Amino acid sequence: MFVLGDPAHGSHRHHKENAVLVSSYLEALELVRKGFAIRMSDGRSAPSLVAPGSLEFIVEPVNRLDDLWTYTMPEPPFSLEAVMVELKQHLRSQAADLGLIASGDAASAFIGFPFDPVDDGESSEALERIDLSRFNMTRIVTASYHSAFRPTAESRSISEDDVEELEQIMVGSLARFSRRHGSPLDREGSALQRTILSAYYRWKIADGCFLASEASDGKDGAIDQSVTEAVAALTGMPATAVRNTLSRDGLSVVRSKLDLPALTDWVVTRRNFSPLREEETYEGRWAWRIANDLHDQPGPTGFAKARSRIADPLPDLDEAEAAVMKRRASNEMPTAAELRRYALALHVSPDSLFSALQTLFGRR
Image (tube, rainbow, N blue to C red; front, side):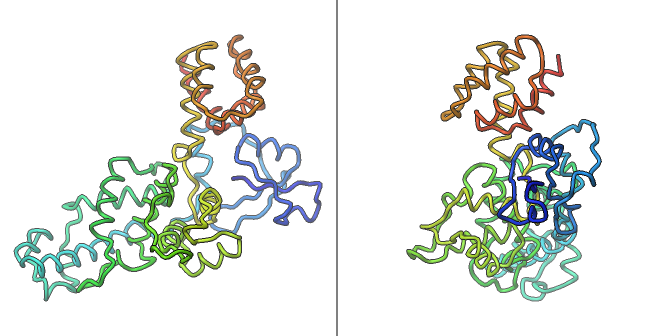
């Protein structure tokens, strides 16, 4: 979401009640060209309104829309190396528990070297001997880190297959009881716990089922801990701060009063939340489906197929579609304004649709 300041409000344009919110990069760019200030950050300092005169406009294509965020991405809250250190501590804790439940031989087979569940449960030497490459959990945690915090331009979202394994790790490893030897995975706010939870709940947002079926504590009107846990992991805020800030902004964490669309919007616009990739948004994914329809089935057939995908298009779809269809009949690319109107009528991302059409029709 882009936040802009209308020059008509003068020195009060930075006030929250005067903010102009748009979700499209093309629309934001158009408003900036008209004199609107835009809220920006370098990813490290707090965002602030920047006047158009202070900006340099560069006409240079990017490979992906996601590349636009590369230089303003929030700093990762911790390094992957820090997560790996905590993963070793977790594996040591699991080996100790396994040794007490089964035997020292079982613990040794699991950890990869002779391991005494009593003497080595807190051993720094044992920690150093752990070979993370032996464990599939290392791959899943690494994928989770890149998915959750986007530390590099090449970081990708977690795959469906890896999400299934991530869920198994969460079920089997996120303990709600005390271990003999504590694990960072059980510690609120630890690098390992936040990485796993953030990747998982971020995927839930992308899949359109964020908190939709999480178990509540069963007490009517009580705070649902799964809500505060999820929001804390995604934003890096302590649970108390989550509850206080949401309450201040008029959002409830009581299961029966959850406004999931509003809560999701609140989460994804937090300063420490790495912007969703286009592939992680409903509007972005459907824009590519629409673009493929128009590419694979030229003419009215493709437009009819695209229209059939949307259950509740806006009333002006007919006019918006006619303008785009006329351009395509002349083998022209629709203007940005025409594409934005068409995309909004179909409830898809204008930026993604524009990018997808450029990519697909540029292959000819």
